[in-house]
Length: 421
Image (cartoon, rainbow, N blue to C red):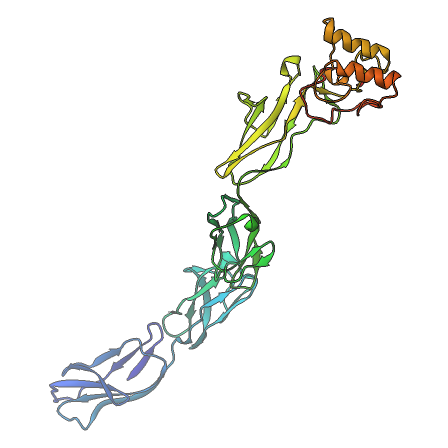
């Protein structure tokens, strides 16, 4: 007899040897092909894990090879896999659809991810919508039936391609003329490609994660960025990085506020410079460095007459130095020629000038006494005033008709001038 064992997928054979016949050996054949040789007294044999199909078995004793001791035919139907699920690489948002083909009676399915059952995934196909990184893994299915042992498919790997993201942006570069500048970007993603740009225009051939510019000159100073593209067609543009080339250049000179700076006022001077980093600053008064004044701004909380002088700043880098224009402090708004600061221009101002020069008189705004604006206070100034008042001479230079700052950089200053708040 031949019996299909559904529980194991085996086929059990049994037979009765003829009385009085002794075999030296018994051969078991399946579909004409010998599959086993058993002892001459054997009466059973189990063909293990036989695939589904229809088979003819013969059991033949060696003393009479032409005659079968057992000849039986049966259909054997157990769980059998025909087609395994297929691995896929997908972009985020796509669908993962896999299917298994199996034969056997009363089939059931249980899909698994990385060996763990997936709730509700009990069909011959598995479909995941809008896949993302959390879906990455290995998927297989356990197929069971009413006959035969459960069978597990080969695992299908799901790879979700990673869109490009920038981890490290290109950094600003400051170099001297003739040096090299190197920009780089660090990005994550699959199938990454790069295109560097200068001021938004593609740089031919610059398609690596690093951009190297050699022997740069001032004309190379500009903005540089890179576009990173991934497998799924998406792209991301980096931040722009600035290339600065050469010695410091001052783009904004230190200037006084519009109201000037009188004794007692707080004053802040500021310089704006570009050039190869790092830039350093040293403020000076009359050419002498001011201790601790090493920032781009310099502040005096309350001006005194002792602070009088010419202020500037020296900006330095590895590529050179640049000194700013000079600012005179204190430097109040005033009216030229109004020596006695009474808000008028008359004979009293000429007398004030003579007293200052020859009688130890005091003034708080030498710029007002400097009637001819030659940068010094001397006898020529009272003479200029008198000529303007009584001799038909020209009026004092600006600021004369209204309050203002001294437009001429010279050795005179203006500490206070009450008529010009």
